[in-house]
Picture 1 (cartoon, rainbow, N blue to C red):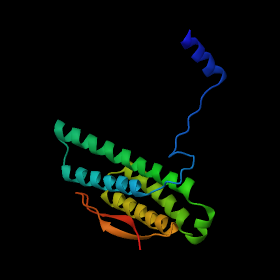
Picture 2: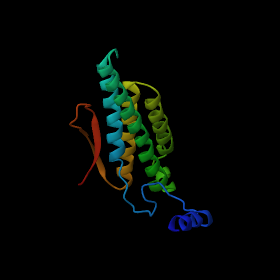
Picture 3: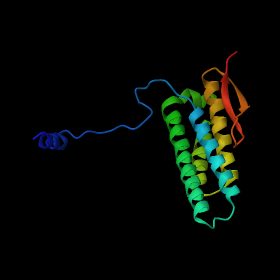
Picture 4: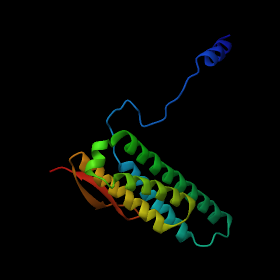
Length: 164
């Protein structure tokens, strides 16, 4: 009986789901995750390059995993950037940072490119564009930033806010 009741309720009162950071808005935004995702895309491209020719089942399994992780993290970069772009930045930010729209657009295209190709150069371009967005983001909050080497096999730098 309960199942029938639930089905009827679904017919007359269908539920809808919202998928976003939270849409309250909570005011908690941070480009750090996008930077780590972009750095992961760089690392997967490095590992794919180091793998060399894929000739045996073990190297094929590694190759498949690297591709899956690369694509998942490239899509995550896009998602994280969409949240910051749509929910955090306002028209007054565009006045102060006129390059912002183009930077986000190019970053989204770059993330797509890293999904479509195995290219360390494209992955590094993605990481750099995400770092630039991070610098603007923290500047818009009145924070200075620092690029600091990130201690991982991928190398690279991450942008951090610094306090005065």
